Image 1 (cartoon, each protein chain N blue to C red):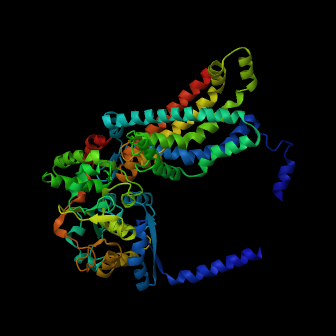
Image 2: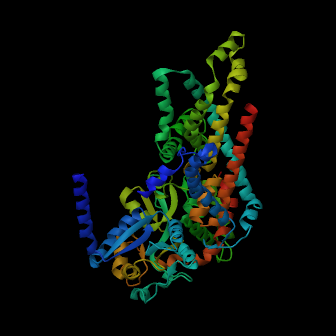
Image 3: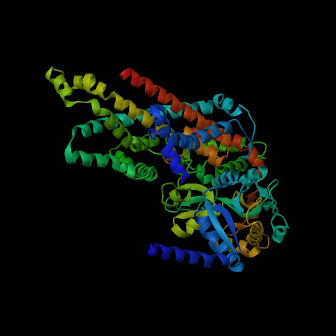
Length: 294
Length: 339
């Protein structure tokens, strides 16, 4: 009862007079808190773990040493692993872009029910888990599978399509395609059909229209799609684990092995932080590309 | 509203009716999947029948490392009372102070265990023995192989599935290959074994068979491979296409230990369970159910003629110390040859 009188007695002030900055802070606070507890804290924990000492047999000694980091950069195996991870992911990103771009362009130009139908088709693979889709690829790419049999029927000695880098690239490219197509579509907003028509009217052949008009206008979508696919490719581990046959050493699979099989948590933490650094670099490149496009 | 109230009332009643029956709950962490199914049937359920006041909650996890990770996370307030895990992981857990000692004060059965069930520096004791076996697909390999050497046969190029190191099946194969190549004491050097494995590499289809090594051989994706005897026997019984051989050169042991978690919530009941798990009847029952070798010398072995004399005595605690080196050799010298 007394509380209500004090409110009444207070001068007539808007109840949420926080100001612009105040409102922004209030709105950001929940997500900032969630991120601090759910993301920042674990990452700091991981960073701390990367300076601990791994004992033979999986034990961890709390200490502060740089061995994990110096070991990583002084060891040709890990340098190769990092290079391999980045180059394979870049290759997958490029391939995904090449196969997704025409689909996205067609989707962008289609309209009505047909467009809705096609969009659902593009998104539908996301409704199945990557594990199931990877097992699907195992069935298709297997030595007795349809693809190998078809190639053999043509009289060509079929190459190994699975349990190597080829298999990982094929599987991940297909799995990442929906992400690429959706990002491309999101970035195609500036592509106005009238601009294309104008270019054609002015006598530009289709190839020139594509290279000089369509491609530059769709660059923001390309940049976004490539960033997303690269990050997903570097961090994906189920598909490389299933299709790599233990021959393809990538950062994500190595983190899994070190954390779950050899129990070397300090090394796993070091590699995880390294992946975060690679993501940071990818984001920086993305920001720079966007600025150039603008 | 009334519906909800009735529902709440019924479930509260059910809860009230079910709780007083069990004075204590023991949480047992062990392998999920077929291990869980068979262990529940052969050991846990008979135990609960014999001890109506104790309830055993089976908390299945896919591998020992995950169990160790869970125990580490719960160190301040353990939720798990008993863990069954691989001996080398149990060593790491013992080193980190996660386990109490299992000795004759916990169970009189400890005195009857085979010497191999006691590992230096591990607070738990062996509860199952297993060994590496040769696996083959009966359609593709028509005459039953007798030697590990069949893995090296060029006839099966691209048809061999080997779970590579750091998986301990790969480690065990390294030690066997070292013995076959006349390499001497594996604790000093496995150079001869590694060299022999480089010759095996071109035959290998996958170093990381999924979901496990048994399925691709049973369905013909691969023709030959290596795996653990107990699981292989279970799959062989259910599929008919999977052949399991104990090769003439002998094999190596894998040991699962049973461990008592330090300051666990139901310590006394946990000890009662461990005592039962090590008893001759539980050991015999699990052997009959899932072919795991008993660690209690008084257990009767009905199935699978175990040839103890053919086993290479692998000191897993010593191997833990050289495992990183073996892994490095595999990755730099063996696996690249199969690309």
